[in-house]
Image (tube, rainbow over all chains, first blue to last red; front, side, top):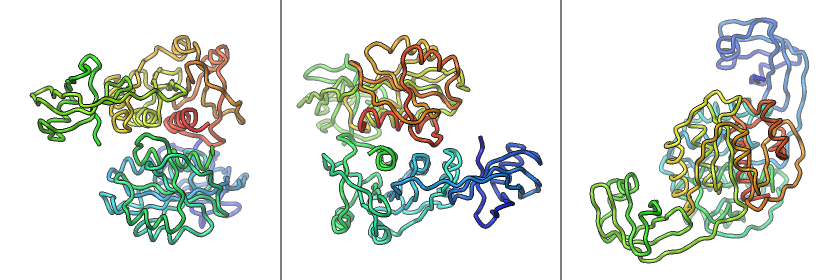
Length: 231
Length: 231
């Protein structure tokens, strides 16, 4: 089954228009024809079963046959991830986190990040692709913050804050806040002293993923799976 | 901290010889000098703190200062993974599984695998690199089986067999066998009916990772983390 994404403004209760890459994927890559049945999500929890009515150069129009709404799964999980040096490892961490249910991705250049910039369009494309691939119907938002402290300022309300920390052992059992968890993962170089201090002030709990050294992307994936699905 | 790997036959209680890529990495890439202190593992549970005595063209000799033996962590986890189409996704799954503690990697071309071959030397290099990167001291063995059934024949003794299965919901709680778990993950195309039948005969338990569709490499990573570390 293939799932397509339509911007919410292109979705009504009876008709949906796919644009850009989504239209190209449906029409040119998968060679769908008028009359074909496809699935589309608006990224806001609804899946639409549709029948294609027009295929144009840049758009694909579809009639809604049936729609299904799905509640968000709790706890809500926001992943706060330091920028990594290698693009493929960052995108992999994000793709896997979304597959495993992360609801929001917040990136920041950490004091020890070797790279300060990221192409948000590529990250957003990876997020969209992972949502469709895993048949999720909520599109996680992607936010770039200036640094860890500004990210903490933006997301501390009503969330339980937990940082992956290889320097501790043993874990406090943490309950999600009203808005779930904020899971904090540092870049390859780990957290700076200033960042540790800022987290301490905010009451961030330290969580150990085990005694072994994990790469950043591995820590991010394991954190999301554990707090979203297992613990 | 950098960790190097030496073949057990090059390890004695007082001297160790690094060869090939390991020697090159120590001497040429990291530019170590005679007298430098380095860490070496034999992949059998021991970490050696050493001092470099000679740097030659293809070898690095080191004197053992101190050695530390580490017990294997239980449960023992063997990952049985169908061959994937894309090499980078297969190697990523293996790298992450080793970081998270998989003790053995068994690969098989599934009935629905699009690719029947794999370069074992590359997989072994990925395993070795992940072991060193995560500061583990046991080198997981890598085995290529002919198909799922032959793999099941080789590894059913004294293991609890669990397959990642998206078609079920709810999970039986499984205890590890005397030799731990055998975690079975299919290729992209999933299991064939014949494979499902073979697993049923062997008493393989089905485990659901959640209601959403996960890519094979995501399922492998989550299975290893859950059964090795969390459940």
